[in-house]
Structures are given as C-alpha cells and as structure tokens.
Length: 506
Image (cartoon, rainbow, N blue to C red):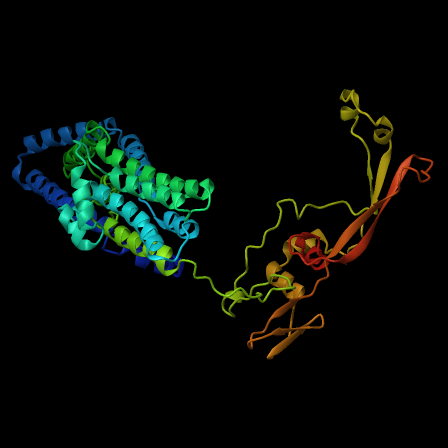
C-alpha cells in the first residue's frame, strides 16, 4: 500500500516539508529509478574512460564529430509530448479504477434502514445481502489483484475465511457456464431483497428499489474495474513510450560526453567528468516513466498499488456491524445544546487562534456611493421593447428607497487594516457568559457542564420595507416612498455582511 505522506505536508513548515517529502525512501522516486541510474552512470563512465585514455587522436576526432552529430539531433525524440500524453491517459484510468473499488457502506446502511425485524430470519436476510455483495467483490479481485489471488487461491479458501458458506459453494458450482460467475452473489442478494419485500420486512417498492439501486451501483463499479483489466491500453502504446525513453538515454551516453581536446569544434567549456545535468534529466524523465508504469496496473503488490485485501476485510466488517450490531439501535433523542439558541459550535483554545474561512460575497467590499436614498426607475431599453406590459402606469413611475445611516470605516482604512478581520468580527458577535452548573438564557434554564458557552450578541437588524398602498395619495412627482425601519433582531449569521460591526471592518 502507498505511503501516506499527507500528515507530513499538512503539519510541517516549508523547510521540514522539503526534508520529509524529498528524502523518503518507501514509494519514492529514488527507490524506483536507482537501479537504472547506477547502470546508466557506469556505462557513461566506461565510454568516457575509453574516449579519454584508449583512443588515438584521430579516433578521438571521429568520436567527437559523432558526439556532435548525436547531440544536435536529440530533439528528434519528442519526449515531453509522448510522456505527458501517456501519463495523462494512465492517470485518468487510475482515478477511474480507484473511484470504483467499491465501498459497501451505502448497501449496508440502506439494508439496515429498510429491512425490518429483530427475529433470526430478518437478521439472516440483512447479513446475507451484504455478505453476498462482498462475495462477488472478492471474486472480481481474485482475478485482477495478485495479492487477493495469493490470499484466496481457491474457492475453498474463501469458505474457510467465512466469505462463502459450504452450501453456497455447492450451489455456486452447480451453475454451469464457461464465463466467470461474478454476478451470482449479486443475483442472490437481489433475490433476498425481493424475498424480504414479499414477507413484509420491506415496507413498499420504493425502499426495495433503493436497496436494489445501491447494489446495482456497487456492481457497476466492479464491472468497470474488470473491463479495464480485460482490455488494457494497446500494448504498442506503453512499448513506444518505454522504447523512446530508453533510446533517448542510450543516445545520451554518447551525445552528452565531455569533449576534452581544445582543437575540437565542440570542445566543452568545463570538463566536470560527472554529467550533472544529464543525471537530473534522467531523474525527471525516467521518474516520469516509472510513475506511469506504476499507475498503469495498480492491482499488484508494489508500494503504490491498491490494498484490496484491506478493502475486503473492511467491507465485510463494516457491513455486518451496520446491518446487525447497529440495527435499530438509536441513541435517546434529547434536546441539543443549541435548542432555542443560535447554532454556535465551540472551538478548542488552540483551534480558535486560527482564522476561519468565513464566507463573504465577491462584491461585499464594493464601494457604494454614500447617498441618503436611491431612486429606482424603469430601464428605457426594457420599456422600449416590452409591448405587453399590463400595468404601464406602474412602470412609468419611480421608487425612492431610503438608506440606513450605518457608520462605515473609510475604504482606505479598510484596505490597510492589519488586524484579523474575522477575529474582530467574531469577537463583536459573541460575548462571554459565566460558567456554572446551570446557565440562564431568556428566563429559561439550560444545564451546563462547566463549558464556557458563548452567547451571540445580536445587533444585526432586519429591515422592513413599507410601501404606500395604491389607494393612498401619491406625491406630485408620481413617486412612491419606501421607508426602511429596524424590525427586531436576526438570529442568523447568513446576513453578516449587513451587520453593523461587520460594516465597520469591511
């Protein structure tokens, strides 16, 4: 299984990430190419020693002209194009295969929710539905994954492992067909779903269809993995890329030699003996090829291949726990701590030091002219083209909307502020409440456990727009006056962009 380096790059500084990530050995580029790199360097130094010490001046002259000829034509092999296109195709196949390995959670959860009954027959139906799905998954993996095949070399070993029962093996062998019988476990599972429906353990066709749909999705993913193993990429494609990379570096053995004679036309400026730049090029191109070859078939026993044995064990264990151990086993329903209160989850003191990526609309910080009111008028283009307006009198008038007088920080100060905007906003939204065994809120008691709850200080007004009725007297300029007044206090954080404290900081 691949080495998981996510923790290393998630909790380290940039310098430590370089040390932890670059100098790992397991699953690393160093482990993948060190053998080829050593062989290439030995061949390079062998040719270099012959050129320097074993050839006569005339032979050296011919060798130098040959080096110049090779080096001038290295671009004839389109390495970047061939490797880039090949890795893209292979990585897309790898992503698709990984996404369809098959987690049985949905089947187990739907089976547990919809197949009712605590008697032995109901338990057997639920457990066998999920076990049959794992059975079919194991049979697919046996034929495409080398590690699973070594674990289950015969069907009798699957019986010994508990994935298949002895009588089911006899039934399995009774089905005569020349093709693989991956489908048989799913067939048994779907028939069990229908049997549970007939016995009244599934209440209706919709729950039955929901379970069947999840089994279908699970089977479809395994079918896709099987077809990828059945029809790989055409052999000539990886052959071509493999041949191109190795031919390129075989030519580099000649074309990248240091020319030491001053009278040569292509004399090297500095004789380093060690071809540093060619070694770096070998590291990148050969490493790129190794990545592609590892992704081409991830169902093996290499460091980065899928651990399908773990997935089989995990699916069987989790599904049995979901449909049996946790069936109809609910916790007592009680009021949560946010009952009659704003949902404001707490943070640990360490986590609270980090800013939260609080949502702000992309136009929130737009600078709006500071005016007392806005005049809303119809757009002349709409009036010109809308021939079917039913209330033309309404559209010929205007509306005037008053603007609340919120004190705002000037835009220049807002942009240059060095304080943490989110920390200040949260600090204004919340006030500390004293701890205790019983917490008071709005005249009601709420039990506490010594945790310092934070009470929202709601200062966010909800605006109410009052529009004069049509039968009221209109102004002489045929306008309607809309007044904006404060109306209570909002208990939602969805409109924090309109909060006065928010406006002071943005």
